[in-house]
Image (cartoon, rainbow over all chains, first blue to last red; front, side):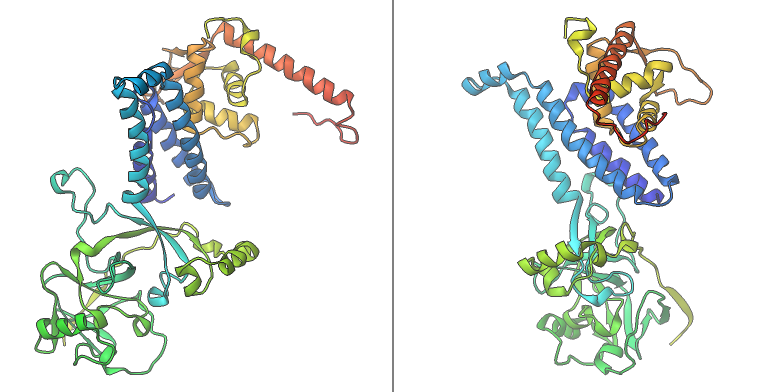
Length: 330
Length: 122
């Protein structure tokens, strides 16, 4: 298992331990953590099969069944009965709330499931990749800075963010420019702060030349949204785009086939939700069926689960890669 | 669980039975028990941490096992690990459970459930 994933697993498991009743976790919590870490280490030495997936599923099942079992065992039901009649047993409510709140917090805040609907990151993330998104990585920890893991968004990071034109949808792209960067494209080549970038992660599918797309920024075009036009009006200086404070310039790796910052403008920093953590399932299906579930997709899934699941992509960790800068000003 | 005769505890749940079996030959820590149970059952029973310590909690309460202060290998071992050992009651209980299961297997054989297949040595 890769060490990042192992650290993550252990961190998540530590949180899960907090859902057990207090006396139980005080007595056994430390040992459970240790046993879990041993398990992770052991799993990392196994080859073949899907040891990590199997560990994750087994642990989830174990947690779900035992946390409620221990919680029920620790609940003094005569207290509950009394509490129902008179408001005395705060402990009972508090302890159960802790279990439920942690569960909700974990599933909504820490990680989120997300499916790649478009081929704009093709080459690194494929249509049908189901991702867990790490929502903690880029969250501002506020007073807990230094305690919680926190990295600011860096160039080359793959980020999941709210689409500024419609914040009900989420997009995933790669960060090309951070505040203060001067950018332009010249014949598909990105020039950042006067240096050409070597970007091994990009994919160029067709050789045609679209001046708007490949020599960005020229002038607003047909596909430029009003937000994109604002960007042209406010942030282009001497043929270069200057990323304003608190914003990011993002592009898809599939450069000729990606609706990205070139068309709809910058991503406000606070719209960044997180980074892809792991692909837990990759299924070969067309975009519209991944976007909203329907009966046909369900049937397709039942028939082709094994053949269309891209097993080689299971538990793939998408990496953020910084582009190298070639020497020489252009 | 104030009554402490083995028969009141039978039948044991599979995790409890296999944990006792794991402790029958030596004291073990949590992960050691987990590995031994997996070995006993050819990987069919993989105890998760919650199941393992939930069982140990109940087994400690029923005095089937107890915590051990001894460390079989203090040099190699992590100081924070706790070891568990089987009590005399635990040994009697697992023996009776094994006999009960042996009886059940005999009954199954008498119904010719194993007919046609050779008994395999374990």
